[in-house]
Length: 436
Image 1 (cartoon, one colour):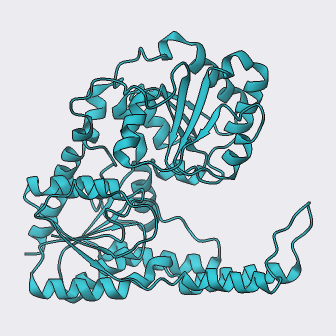
Image 2 (cartoon, rainbow, N blue to C red):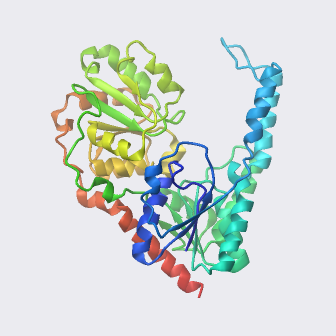
Image 3 (cartoon, rainbow, N blue to C red):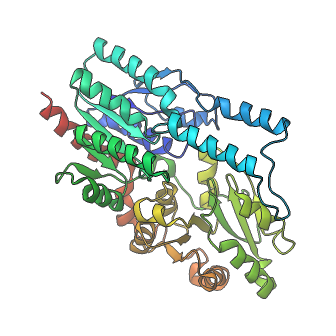
């Protein structure tokens, strides 16, 4: 089986944890993957993730044309010439700068189709074709984002007739430009029709695809994200010494995306003003990358000691910090995301078993946390509900480490990667038989 994915360890992105888990456990189901990935040095590296991949799994890496490289150089040249000045003190953006940014958006729309990783597709397709000539693969399994990964699967399906399983780890959100949206819809429809099977991570995403593209029953299968149980073997409880003692620690792991925190930080500032005696007990750890809202409120005199920005840590260290914290924080204040997607870290949060405070709209995350009896979900725009949840976290004895770990073990266990790999293998078996 050939697994085609742009990102793969040691490169660290949100999608590599799922693929690392599947690659680790698929050989036990009778499917040993050859991995085809991009050769890249951008982003964070976590060599420990690569150690999880079985030694007999072959990893082939190809170069990629970095189409975005021109942007930084062009932007620097324009700024040196006095253009693209940031608007300050409420001044309106200059007409020239508006035109330049609009033109840049149009150029991106034209060249980055279906996304900025399209420069990898020719190299990946050529290498995949070479691998296929040397060894007939029973199945090709493409996993994105990026969306362009699926084009490699389409090419192999067309050239060699090899059964193709296409996975969308995240929804394909529509473009804002009408013409771009029309072309993307056509491409997505073509990919969905030509794939032998489609895998998505949430029920909401599956329902949207089936309703929009009128797919036949059974073509789309939901296989959620999960966790590797080996990460938790021999667990003896919370790690000591990782987080400062004497405080209640509420921790967010991963990138805080712009706009996803809703009104959490304004609510936290109000809570600090109303309950200074409680706020002194709180440490809010951002273990990953902050957005501008986090940085702004971290400079607020009321919150300077409360908000602790710690930056990126390797996955193994992040899991230790999850066990050491008193509560786990999720920011999912994007309505489209909540309707169709669930953050991958949610499943590790569930397995750790500490109470989860999710700032989220109605959707899969809310249902998952409530069904697992794993914590609280508050509306991103409900300041009073956020403050109430913070007060409960700081004062309610039932929230202070006395909840079961995890709250519903039988519910959480279904998200183990060894079990999810078994479900994926059933799909491979099915499409491979059809291709015989």
